[in-house]
Amino acid sequence: MSSSNKRRPNFLLIVADDLGFSDVGCFGSEIRTPNLDKLASSGIRMTDFHTAAACSPTRAMLLSGTDNHIAGVGVMSEQKEHDLARWDVPGHEGYLNLRVAALPEVLQDNGYHTLLSGKWHLGLKPAYIPDKRGFDRSFALLPGCSNHYGWEPQFGEGMIKHFERIPPLYTEDGNLVDLKANTNNDPKGFYSSDFYVENLVKYLSERPTDKPFFAFLPFAAPHWPLQVNKAYRDRYKGVYDDGPETLRLRRLARLKELGLIAQDVIPHEVVAPPETEWSAFTDQERKLSARAMETFAGMVEKMDENIGKILNYLEEIGEADNTFIIFQSDNGAEGASYEARPTMGDSVLDVVNRFYDNSLENIGEYNSFVWYGPRWAQAATAPSRLYKMYSTEGGIKVPMIINYPPWTKERGGEVVNAFATVMDIMPTILDLAGVQHPGKTFRGREVEEMRGKSWVKFFENKNHIEDTTTAIHLEDDPAVGWELFGRAALRKGNWKIVYMTPWSYGKGDWELFNLSKDPGETKDLSGEEPQKLKELLELWEIYVKKNGVVWGSPLSEVEVKVPGLERKDVIGGDPLEDTRAWMPHRGHCKD
Image (cartoon, rainbow, N blue to C red):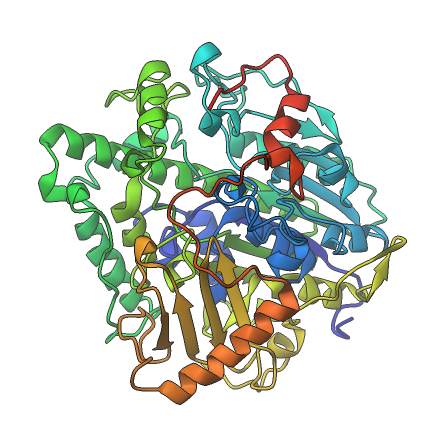
């Protein structure tokens, strides 16, 4: 444990859901986030912090300190049916598996009181939910998202798989919660961001005060469906009327002004279907699109307001100075456009139009269901390439704020440009807590060791070399790889290779980028630097082997069916069956 801390620190991990790099004020946004801005002004912002390309893989890495392909989420449970046989291998269960010692489990065994209030998304089976993975108290949204007001229509015969996967399925300490939907914006009723924080404050007020605490606060906001009280939505009325490209340029200018990107950076061009061009929209389509973005902004402001409540509570109970606080997003901004997906778009839109009211005035209400699409997302990920679900920088580089007075008291407002990953958080926390990782065995089972690297030496060495990529991850440390849904990347120092199929905005071969000169991944150097490409491809093969990545033939654009092979027959089982076991009286899909 760090010698500068005699009392073991508390930990508060705050994770936003699908928040883009520039979606909070201190990272260049016009969205009002005074509490996060204050946290950053007395803390440190990290500009080269990386996650996985999507929600559950990131959470698996965060809570295991290792690669998502080892921790059980080499593929998201929602995606597995695209090619069941391909992902029927260990590490692709779709939930946080028992090959890893989870961070709350290790802390729990070493005297910490462990709490979760928010989104889980790491398993639906009773044996893999928070109370079985080290949390003393937990209120958890089990699926990947849900209605923020706890409501859903009576779908009946209209139920489809997309909606059956995302019920308001909550558990508290392992027991199903009978959640009452909030259909009138009752301030005392359920709204995800409000309730998660109120509940965490309650848990903290009931904690044993002779133990330090580990509190995990994973918001479901601002993930779709975009929903928030109109009072917050309407604070942004008119702000986005000029469209996403205007917003993108404003964000880029502000990022430069804040010193978070280089003045001469070349941003990647926006990649999106031509029919989503602002100029191609009718006046009504522009109003609806701007309203969705206004709602998104209101959700972020509402989340920030609630973050302020938990920070104020830490001050009230005298724990603020001894609490290591992290704020981050789980991946890049969400650019999915479901209406543009030929395999599922018609059915999703049909159900939305049948059961929800997405009229201009109603967007954001409990009975609306909207997302904002690829162009608004790329306003938030600029200057980076693409967005969530891609292993390009736009999908995996996210805002990160650290606030821990022993590290940050004399460095408030500082910006750190060192490369780091979400796998580093567990080793950092264990280091600060004075706890050893159990190694290869834990609670009677074999487990994998951590792949991440502690930040303690970096932040406690006042003479470290600033503004370098090697200050945390040194030249002799292993390369860092990413893979999700057949889209891959690997980074060593400033060099990065990327692979994507032509049907997912790639060239069907490896691309090479020098991120120190080209953070937007705009110039493929694979032809000019064949030796560097060869070097990184050799490291990629090592990464694949060590982490159990499914690699080889490119992922098919269309769903691959194997006669006789059903979801329940493959590793991890069928998450829809798991959902139905919790909610047997809810409607079932037929697709």
